[in-house]
Image 1 (tube, helix red, strand yellow):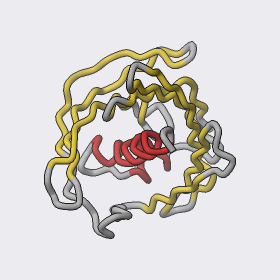
Image 2 (cartoon, rainbow, N blue to C red):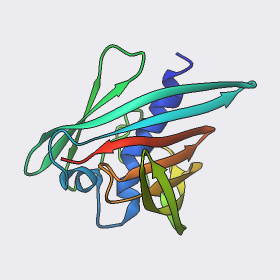
Image 3 (cartoon, rainbow, N blue to C red):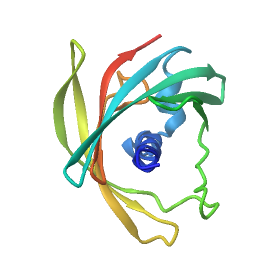
Length: 171
């Protein structure tokens, strides 16, 4: 259970990142430009009580339709993958309050090159303010995005968890 909560936080943050990149985009846009089988793998690192924990996550575009995409999330140590469907232009509801949250505050902070495997990728960096069910500030995070990477998310720092893409494949 101790590994599940940080992973869910990261998965939720990554699902929201493409929406944050531009007012005209949504998670569908971040995946629909790629073919079925496109994927990105991440390494998530957290530190608590002086102990460092590392987990691996893989996101794969498993189904692409005209108005929706299905992303399969596989996490190291978990037997059952999780599927997430993103529909074009549709806001996701929060599972806790069953409504869409206030749009995140987004501030572009610059550009940074990040190495993924043997490829150097130029990313755009963002500081993000997230809001909870009560519409109050729920936390901040930082994201590195690149439209050449499936799902656009290259790196994220959120609540003591750093997530970094380690390999990606475009189809």
